[in-house]
Image (cartoon, rainbow, N blue to C red; front, side):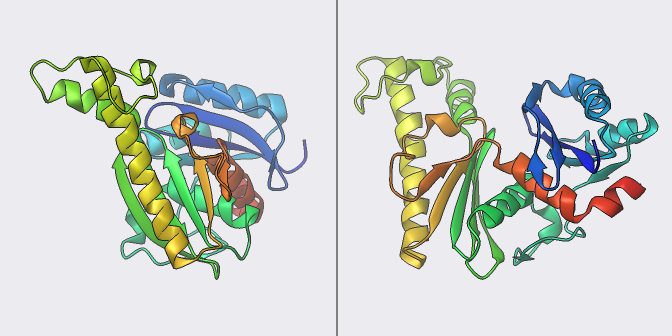
Length: 252
């Protein structure tokens, strides 16, 4: 397919892969374990006749994966702040800004142009990023993700069991230890997210809130007005970046 680019969102837990064309995802999203990322990327690229790959990775294997893809004949670029971006980055240390946060902001900026946006990415960590209506990625906050909170309570105490969202009954008052842990984690996450949402709305009442990431379904917030769930927001942002940086990607 003409002008097709493979986009990869390699998170801390798994990788998401998809084909993009003209700034749009054109095939189903594929989920892969990290050790399968290169093989699945090459298979999907061959299937879609991709001309190159745009890699967004927060892992230590970023350069290794990119090199393996290039060695296999697939021109591959790693998302960086040197690419053509649709907004300015106000982060004081822009080179430390997670590429997934940049790509998510690109997806949000295209979906709600000219509107202040708070992007909540609920993955291994939970990130909150504020994007201004006039196109400035201002920065935000990083906190432990849901799974990390459950594991921390188990790892750093002597007797608390390892729990997960299956222990969550929805009640604020847990009548046993597992339910109490689940209540503390889930209500804590919701209160935290609600605090950042209130902050965004206080700064600009017209702000849009978008939730993405592997744990987005665990946020009981999307029924509220002005809050949207976009599980593939990072991939959508990568598709747009692939379109705007196509020539540089395929020349590598």
